[in-house]
Picture (cartoon, rainbow, N blue to C red):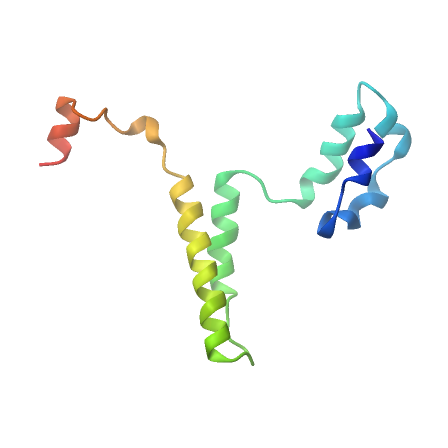
Length: 107
């Protein structure tokens, strides 16, 4: 389980010191300790990701940046927001293609 701790890179490497080596070595609770320690610090789930991306649009102010650079950053944030919004679609609610219900919805 120590390899989990060593595999943390980038922004996640900051949290290495929060992991207890003795608990990571425990075969029964090692993975649970790893997940329980890191989970509160990372965004998860489609609802949370959508909300996070939605709020990022409000924080995408230009400030002192050049307009051309700001537009690029804003468009990237907008594309990410639209992608996370489409992840919220529940495909099980849609009728089967070719069914009477499907035909009725397209008229």
